[in-house]
Image (tube, rainbow, N blue to C red):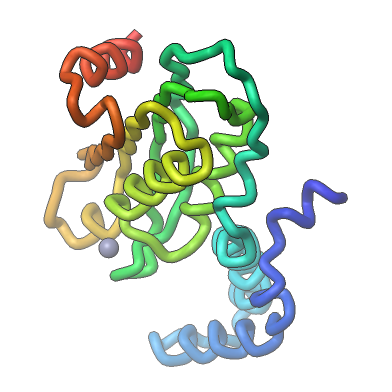
Length: 197
Ligand SMILES: [Zn+2]
């Protein structure tokens, strides 16, 4: 139960009835019969989904890394294929994909599962992919003070698919580099080649 609580956004939870009411009003305004059987539980279901997908607002992403100290390891560490799910702030439509994080520690390291928690904390809110990418890089940089950080995020955006701007299935790729990754093309290509394996 303790783990479950991490995902519950107390703002939505504290205002469940109001959120349900407004979802019901939107259903009415798009022309739906809110009393038909298929929709009776929809406002409550959407609200429960909001508790989960907007849980990031209740988390300070700086707190999730669980820093430990290890003077020995100063080689590239990569955690790749961290699945995320977020909501585009322009359309409130889902976008999702994978984040890949590489960094070179300089004494402080983060638990590998904690990098996934960081991705979760920044993506479970209204976002744009570019900002998810830079926030992960900036928080890694700020909290771990590493020699360098590189973050690559891939995403599929349903608002693009639905509005026909891009073909369904097309991916947006964003990246952010800090520290030694900025100045070393060799380091950037080492990271990128390890992502392809
Ligand atoms: Zn959008």
